[in-house]
Length: 444
Image 1 (tube, rainbow, N blue to C red):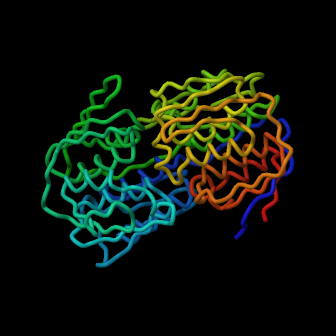
Image 2 (cartoon, rainbow, N blue to C red; image 1 turned 30 degrees about the horizontal axis):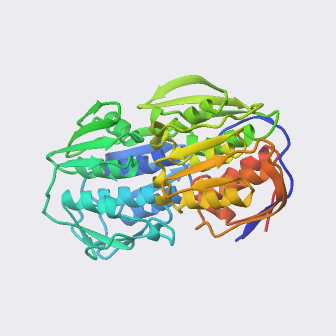
């Protein structure tokens, strides 16, 4: 396995049209819903990243038959509460917090103890935020009072609550409660801070009885469980989080242009685009169409002459949570001070991203002031690097690796960036597309 990539040259200007890999959030959800459906589902353009392939393997361990033919995955759903598996099984979620949390909610009615594990990074993350609501919905967790993986889950008949408040703006927590509620016959009420709505869109598409009332800051979601729902066909659009790395590459490469086709532009995922527009970046979003509750379009962007700083409104935080690393990199070349606040959630990701990015910015000579919940970045429009830079010990966080690669290709310097295989977690074709655009690197 290659340990690091070397980058010694900046990328030259480009004008390209590309396709990026399928949406990770929808890929994981589509597999889980297909396994709970009755009948055979067909899923095209499934993201074949480590997170998604771990989802496939976990579902197979639970007795789900899944096979691939050409670009289509076929999933033989067994229906709600009908998994067939041996006692004392272990499921490995790898690096995926989404998979781990949604799996636990899927297993809320398991008659046997099921063990869930993850890699070193995932095992450091707090699962208390999901353990508490699932316990109140009738699950038991072992060992008791433990909040990190590995954990075991089993059904109890002790449902304590039917109303939940999700205050962090976490789509993973909200989705986990929704999937657990789907398997309960009674009504479950959720009051949630604004976050991604892929699960709500799936519920609507699958005709699961759901009522949603939206206010400016909160969503009120009422769900009544069902005994079964039908299998489905789904063609997964491209991932906007993955697209943002190439949008950033274009923004930071003079006289360049890119068009990315068939991107999911769900309104709850456009925070990064809205932030970058306020920073003076011009986008063309064309060929917009609706698909099973989601919106898909082509995105075109040109490199700007200048980048404006931003006092980022917190209303964009939840819809840009996975893109902040790349936004911080762009802010490093803005003319002035950018301020991002109420973003402590970044430290609950695959790595403590806020802390790591602050150290990264300091390493490349960008002054910043970081707290546990905010960061101020003093941009330098003339930033050009000439020294030697090493990026390692970032818990193999895929987004940190990709952000560092974009920095190396656009800012100059002689770079060693460790753990290139981490990109496989969410974006297996990342380095292949970098090469297609003219980026030069050596795998070591």
